[in-house]
Image (cartoon, rainbow, N blue to C red; front, side, top):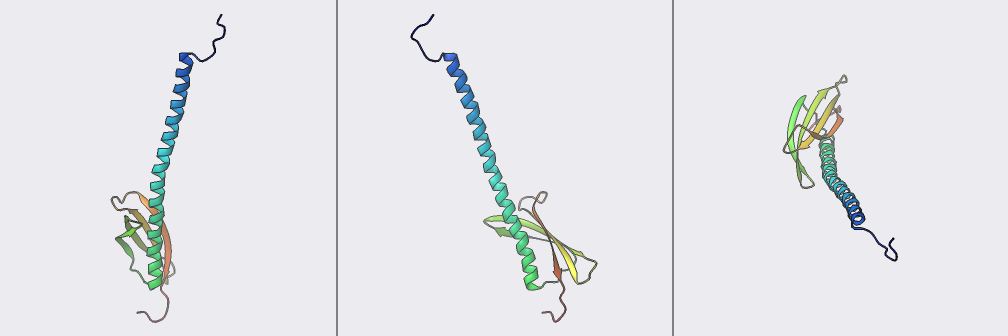
Length: 127
C-alpha cells in the first residue's frame, strides 16, 4: 500500500489532456463557422440595400418602366453586385410590379436578396 504519495498517474494526465484538446478544437471550429457566417450576413445586408436603392430610385424619379427583364451592376460597401429587375403587369393598369433580385457579382445562381415593390403611373404631365 502506498503511503504519503499523492498525485495523478501518467494515464490520468493524458486522458485529461485529450479531453481538453477535444474541447478546444470544438471551440475553434465553432468560432471559424461564426466568422464565415458574418461574411455571408454582410453580403446579404448590402445586397438588400442594393435592391432597396433600385426601387427607391424608380419611385423618386417617377419612372414608368417597360415590361420585361433588365440587368445591371451596383457597388455597395466595397462589394460588387449584379441585379436583375423583372417588371410585371398587374390587373390595375396604373401599377406595375417590380421584382428585384441581387446576386454576388461572380454568380447569378444564388440570390442574396429579393425585393418586390410596385411603381405607379401617376396621372398628370410627365417629363
